[in-house]
Picture 1: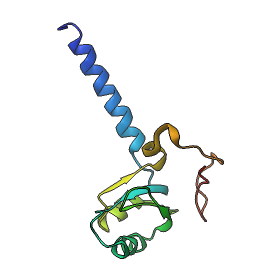
Picture 2: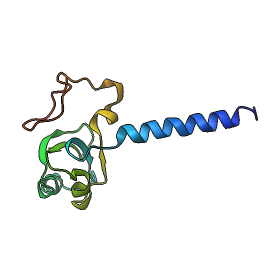
Picture 3: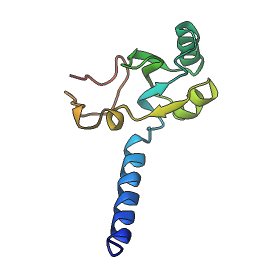
Amino acid sequence: MRDLFPTILVTAFVLMCIIVMSLRPASDGVVLVLFNPLEDQRDQVAAIMNANALFVGAGRMPGSYLVASDQGGLPDRLHAAGAWFVLNPFGAAGCSAETIDPGRWKGGLGRNLE
């Protein structure tokens, strides 16, 4: 068992790196933003608008929203507006995310998700 410990440790480290890199949001495009679920929804949507982001849709968890912007620095603006986490929505969805159009977001309603 002692011989397996370094292998288990390195494997855990590599998996954590993969998870962190897959959740890292882009500086523009569509992101998943998580706010304090105990805050009022109007305040959360106002924070999204104050960050110059477009509301794409509500997430499955309370306080989570899909938002988009074609301007760089979206995660920083959302954090400054009060967001707890800003994540890559496709990394957060894992293998269950399927896209119809694999291209980058070009404005409007964002990527089409099934």
